[in-house]
Image (tube, rainbow, N blue to C red; front, top):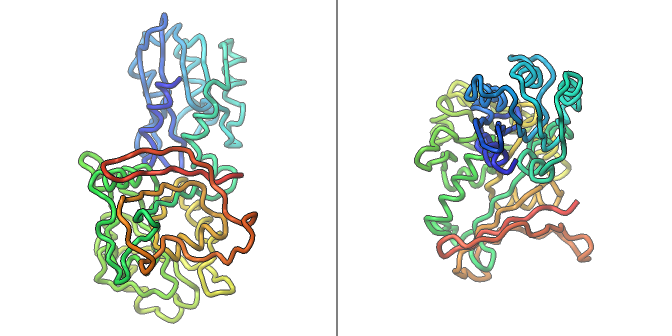
Length: 362
């Protein structure tokens, strides 16, 4: 099952809105075939493994990280495919919460006489598919905040210089994070300051760049911006306010002709775009995993309102000082009991930097 879980990770950032699944077929305790969900969500992991095994699949045991589907979508049910291939035993890590499945796959296989064991490495499987689970259960994507700061928590100097706070190795990890998420989000301030493309530039993973998303409540981003200029090559979504959409109709048309999708959401009492609305809109777009790269305003808003599920905090060994730009602005918290609490999940040194993984306490 651990092999199947590692295979499942290959689909992260590539298969939304489908889950990333891994499947391993064994015969006499020897692996005879492997499969994982392919780009775009099809073929499924079970189909891939069965195709690779061919006639050898008969009488084998299948290890699958998610309950095989029991419904007919673009392809037939994977549970039926396992039955028809002559699989004798299926080991499942976790049930599929999708209402179209939710135990139906296991029942179908059991009714056909297959031995089914479920719950093996369930916690690890839920972690791999945390984005899929979030979207199925809440309609919202899993939100991961990535921060790159100095040792004292600054993301830039007093004059706004930020390239590069962390080293080459850490930045490569950051690009790998992009490849594992369905969409990447920044605020208009960061977009205007850095003029980024927000693509994955790791060799061999160039085709895994996420949907680029910008919160631009006042539609300030010009048609000459790199994101606009590349919108026909890789999807770009601008979230803005209804007011800006009405006031800047000509600008909107120019952006749309360039390939930018513009979605209007309501503003909160402080004039900021309502977080739940743009998160739900991304969920409706099929996004299961959202990577947020800042800047400080966006990070502060998401954290203070407790929308962040995971944090990857990249810290250099340099100190900028108190006149630098803090990664997170004030929450206005008086009591420690009201702080936004996270648990440490991972810690690693990369070059001269460290990367700390944190998960929000539920």
